[in-house]
Length: 263
Image 1: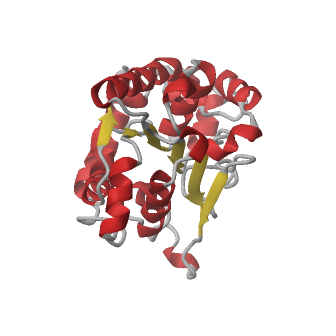
Image 2: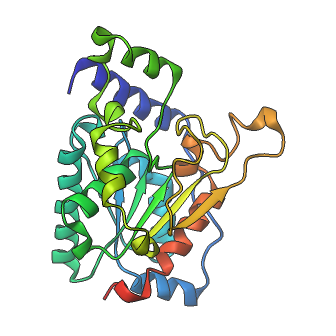
């Protein structure tokens, strides 16, 4: 991982420490629902680009409080480099969880973590060991990212400084083309995509998270436009402080597709 990549990943971890989320997300489940959570299958948590397992602190402890078992995955190089290496790490984690628990895992992934999870499931044969994939703010069709990233990509010398993960999330990247070709809408019941209905500060265009045939859950923006950069849901709050995003993810995890339910 380059010095620039390490700086980027370190800055993200610093922001997560400086702006911690709430003690828990969502209203506590009833005892009956907690029992259902315990039988729904272990949850493999996949962080995004430049993140670490610390990304899941709020959601992780909320899921545990609601009766789920969770298994965070640390992606190689903080998810900054090759997507296929990261995808293999997801597959290895799934296999380990299955070996340890004897149960079929489900995946909850954030942002770029959803992209690398799909790379494992659709391009590396991972579906045979997973019941479903639930994604938060994942650019399933790629993201044009920020104006700064677009400007860098147009200059060969600057483009070399961009993390591999940024390039791989470009809508016209080789990875995105392969994922689009491999996706079968008939398999959509195994996907839940949760995302901000409006631009979340990272995923552009805003409809990139929508997958045909999947359970697509759009989170409404704040009513007052001046709150939209700071208030939920934005790319940061969706994984750290959004009760709406957490509740939608929890509901999906409670009810994996019947034909491939964890056993």
